[in-house]
Image (cartoon, rainbow, N blue to C red; front, side, top):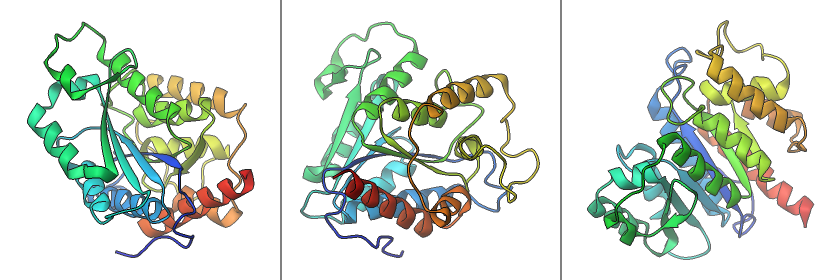
Length: 277
């Protein structure tokens, strides 16, 4: 795997980047597979860690998929400011055994953290595993976790994402993108893997790129998806956009190459930080 960064090793020190990645229903159409999504996670995570940043991922521990990639990447780093945080919503926290939670915390070691968020947005500890859980709506719990991550990150990178069969009141990646904008974070949309991120790319661009086939992405016209997209657009219209070069914008919009996506994101994150200092 390439070293996907062309920026100084401390360029992202203190920067916290939310990573939202999941497979989409469009992968096969694009000649891709879930393995390619894992490669994106690995490359983007490595680029951010090499530059001293923190990757924050809200998701699941089982099946391991992306979590395993994050754990593998952080274990390459023995010292420094680089870090990985994995954040679990209360339904995932309650459904995961204490043994698996403890094992994951040990694998993260001193350069990572496993965090748990209650259905009402409060941070939990491993001791809360044994307490009697309150009754709550699982969809609200996932939203609370996503709000927690949005409040605690400076930027968000979104790739893929389900537009059908998702957990929560709306597609997770669309909700996470909107919440990040509402929290004042930068948003980087990699649309080349289809799904929710491709739909966001179309919305942000204001037109459908020529490379996208007809009826792409799948399930985009579903009523609930369109309502979620309208909420995103309402926020996006009042939020300043990340300044990307035309070349970098086209790479993020269409590229299937994990290293290209990672390098573009890392370079843009570093440039945005320099501009704000």
